[in-house]
Length: 234
Image 1 (spheres, rainbow, N blue to C red):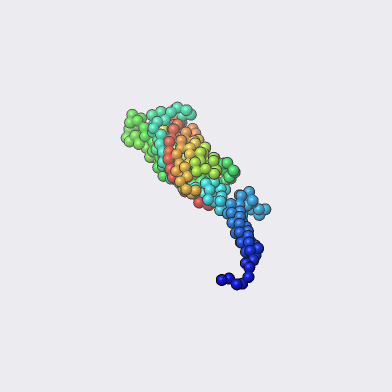
Image 2 (image 1 turned 45 degrees about the horizontal axis):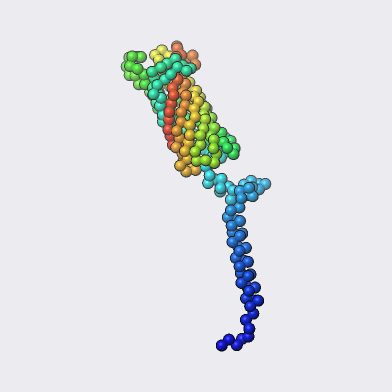
């Protein structure tokens, strides 16, 4: 039988209440630390560690990001838009380098450079004697690309560039020129499988012209559909 006197219930209630209070305080502050709003994370000297981790884990293309890619595409026919040559097919294989020059909340501006280890023009057999397949290579050193939907894994884009191709024979007609300038404009979509890996599908209006540096300048316009894969580094 208990003989130590009456239980001090007021003291028991006080201890229990204090324990619940401490537990609730701890849970509340753990939640606040875990779900701190991004807006509270900015400081005068830049972005704090939590915000930086959040941005780096997103699909945003930040200033200074580099793109390395491989793509290939072709045109089933040529049309008369700026040039005068029809019935030509074009195949392009390109290596892409890009760098984000500027980034905003909803879009980014990217510089692009493409190296073409293979460019092939297919023409009707009646055009010239010998092979109707003409091989070339080239470079597009000046290009710009605007990427939209910064925070989305699906990024539409528009692009424009200018470069050159050099072929083993005159293109697109005999007695024109082996060397041709290649201005182009296009659009497409990049699907980011991860924040640093993307599949690309696009279209470009590709113009080929020797700018009157050859004996004749017929010009050729191609509707190029292409696909590729890119990875991105900080």
